[in-house]
Length: 357
Image (cartoon, rainbow, N blue to C red):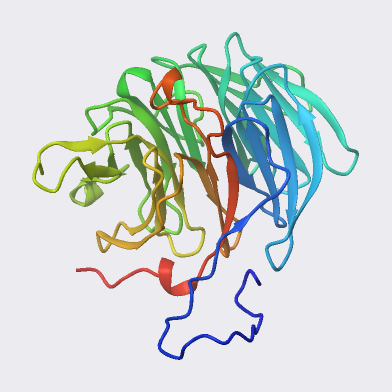
């Protein structure tokens, strides 16, 4: 079946039956352990996939959603984060071996490019007017900036706690740490926070994600308690701040007040529309419009938690991982737990902004 709905299939179904929904495509030859992170190259449809099996895999995604494994390289511990440089010719990853590694797709050579005293939870590429910089956030409570032409960090910033999540939309960089601290940086002054706030959500921060294609700068925060907050950076825009519940299920139709609550594992903003996805431990994915404050789409529930999501550079492909996220502890790691990497062909109407209410 074609990824972009171009194939004409001749089937003899009853005229009254609705056309079946276009099936999402499962990527073959995937990691042997849970998938932690996904990132598309900004230059082509190459997908980097980080896993708890200590490896990063790079796939090329073709026009019809067929994928081809292009490369694999390793860390000496689980891989927690992946990103690309601006040219899309180098994949960068951070892991539990306290190292960030860069893989050059032209030479096929990996090399270590960053070092911390504890696992590197997040790697992000920052394209500045002066050139590209790698930012690494670690459980050693530091944020470091690296110019990859030199072996030592160009700057190191002390964080209030362990880094759990980080995102960048130049000149905005947002870091979420343990104990619900959120630090906002203006990258014209990258070593001291522009603002430090406590998360608007009452529970542990799982993910922060910066707005795309937005006139006013801001970010979304997802917590372990099935809730997302939309937060603007500037005080003048604070009337737009709000939070909403998601990734919850009623235990029984009668007991509305006793819902099962799941973690929001990832938030991805569409690069063109500025709408966004959330995914959770409940195996569900939703698309949302923050400005119209409305839900745009709900995916069929997956057979396991969704651990990571990402859009490709022009927002035509949405990749998501179905993996165990340890949300139920050791007992939830059952034999044969699904571990899948899926590709969804984005239709324009499912991500289009709605008129403001």
